[in-house]
Length: 140
Image (cartoon, helix red, strand yellow):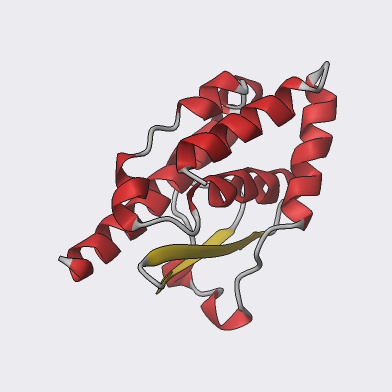
């Protein structure tokens, strides 16, 4: 599946809910299925700067594809990073670098977050793309 098709799937899923309380509950559920980071990677080096909550992300290459694992100490934030990892994990770094993030706006996520969480969301996206850039330079 392409990143875009996964993003469209996420948009479709969020459109099934009538209000934002249901969408928050869904995000919390998504957070429970997050591929969890191993304890040894829960270090300061893997904390995403700019998030109100603690969010750890680890990336590694597996068969030319970048695989992300993560965790957070806040349930909503865990759901947010789960959505991003679902969209970007298991793809080639160049695909992640080139991918747009319009699906975030289409599901209305940023506008329904507090300003600090919205900043955290931007920081999470930036960090995932920075991992992709770092691994892409190793491939070339």
